[in-house]
Image (cartoon, rainbow, N blue to C red; front, side, top):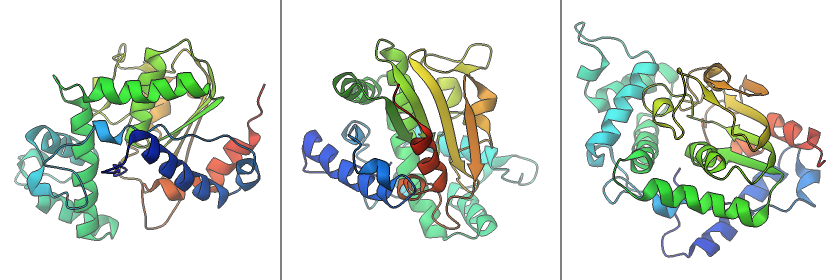
Length: 271
């Protein structure tokens, strides 16, 4: 989320983001591993841009209707109180986010900017009739096919894209699928819209993945519900929820430098 690199080719954007991810991983317990690891970031952000809802100036007022619908579904999962017994759908979005910011002791501006960016991209990816989903999923699948990684690390919306890419290309085996700050289990907004669709309200580990580990910050507003991935999906080998960062929720940088991620990667051995 928020990784679009305007004016750059996909190759150059991937190289830039790869350098950023490598630096953050090297800040944590996985520093020794980063000295020899071959790391490549699969860039797909150019496929999930909405002209009205993206960029540095993303604003709630510019959210398309389907993105606003996702915001309301998400707010319902966060326990938004009923107003006059009419339910969270009656709240103006900005008012509801102000309530959330006060409850979590966060900056209202930070929350609004985060919501506009995140749900703008999620809506663009899930939007019916758009090519964004196929294009983003294929971009990730092609990198997996080319690089043949033992480990796939996926953050935020990237965990949804990678999950679907691994299902779409089961011929490429992966030893470890590590999801960070994942909205995969977000009821109503994401989970029931996955491809393949959950069976009897339960999803499953992609067949090409040997081990699936999920890590979520307890304060992450996207990784809902708590321990949701292991509750909603079969085949999750570990589902860790702990405090990653006290204030900057959901940032990939903090996840990558965390002890939980470093320990998961350093315990992993190439067969």
